[in-house]
Image 1 (cartoon, rainbow, N blue to C red):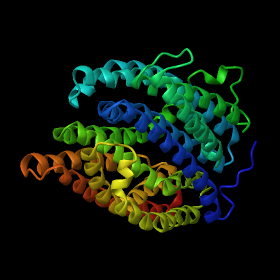
Image 2 (cartoon, rainbow, N blue to C red):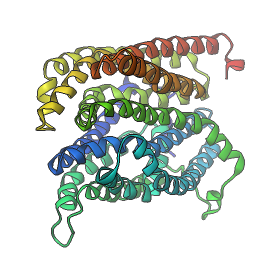
Image 3 (cartoon, helix red, strand yellow):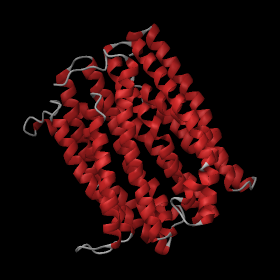
Image 4 (cartoon, rainbow, N blue to C red):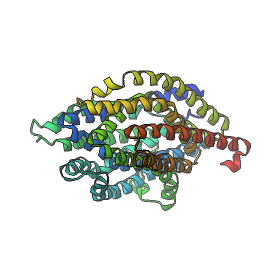
Length: 453
């Protein structure tokens, strides 16, 4: 059993030791997606647009896996903080079992409902077929995707973000080889076009799930009891669902938000959809230096919540936000200055590049707002208060965008740029709400820790 350090070591050093590997890993994960986008661009604008349109559907899988991972991390981390090792081990094994059951349901759901969702976003004919060529392989391999999230929940609950980083680095490198091979064919592999992008991803996820399984076994927390502990236990499944479902719904609202954005952006043509898809890849790269902070916040807060150390919870959130400000406020400058060249790296279509550059210049103004939202919601999830993220997600991703986009584009006829400014307003409003709510809850724990927990 590994030594527990998240409740004892200095907070700034812990944040750096968790956030930096996580950010490096997420950089390579983003580069994985960037490579997909770049090679899809070699196929054509329709292929790039199909990947962009597929993201909200693919995000259903990401949302469920990420949600269960976040919920499980809170449970495992809290049990470790309370020094209940046997309970932590049981959560680890039951999380894997829970993930397998859910992944099978997702595979059926995704393949069955994807065509309906694509049609709702304006895909028909050959465009729809291209979207489905990418989506079907992805959902067929749902168990491999979700197992990575389940295993990573255990690793991150113990403060290990290096293992996932290593896999994401390897995955990004493999993707540079497999994408062109599977897309264009060769060495016995037929040319698969955009489906090749999906099958490359599937193969890499299978490699990753095997590697993370090996690392989880080495933590000493994976005791299957010769398979007996994998048998679903309703009470523990309910605990996982209570923590994981709100987090999944929160992630799912992000996918729904993409669906809403794509629906309104599609009014301005395939070029606009492609521009948004490419620009969000650039946005993800810009946010990467800070994105590991929410992983650090959740890991450290969960264990210190279990240990009852509210001062360390407060210090964790404050330090994460300070680091986020130092990183993201200066990062906006190069994005504003180089938005067009960044877009030209991924597309030769000048219309797409111009639309995407406008989005990036506006979006750079809210980079720190994203950090506030992510860190505060992660801290609340670590304190076993997952529902706030759901309500904030419903406002930020669904209600506010649907209202503002409709008002700006279909009533006031302000054009595509009004969507970008609406996103800016929504993010900063949500950041203010998240910070205030997290501060109130930490203060409640400090004044009445027993009833607060």
